Amino acid sequence: MPTRQASALAGVSRAPQPASPGPRPAPANKLTTQEEALILETLNSERFVDQAPEQIYAVLLSEGTYLFSVSAMYRLLRREKQMAERRRQARQQPGKSRNWSRTSPERCSPGTSRNSLGRPRGPTLTRT
Image (cartoon, rainbow, N blue to C red):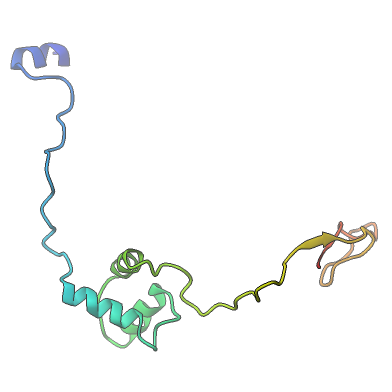
């Protein structure tokens, strides 16, 4: 029996039913605020401050400790806006430009070789 006839006989619409309105209930395995605080404290500790969540997870697991999943770490770091690079980065000095300019096509940049015809691979860029 075609769907059109079956829905007409049953007195229901053929369109899919919309999702139930209103907020969804909290999952049963949701982290408590104490657990979230423990995760953030561990991630931001001096020992793990410059490591990725996968590395932290592996270290803790090798020590026989399971505190939380990698996805929980990422979720909390994203929420706390700490998802940037966790390692200490060198900063560019203020007022110093990082422009690049082309040099002559005859020059071969350091660390590269010439092609089979003995010519350089192309123009190189040098910092000005």
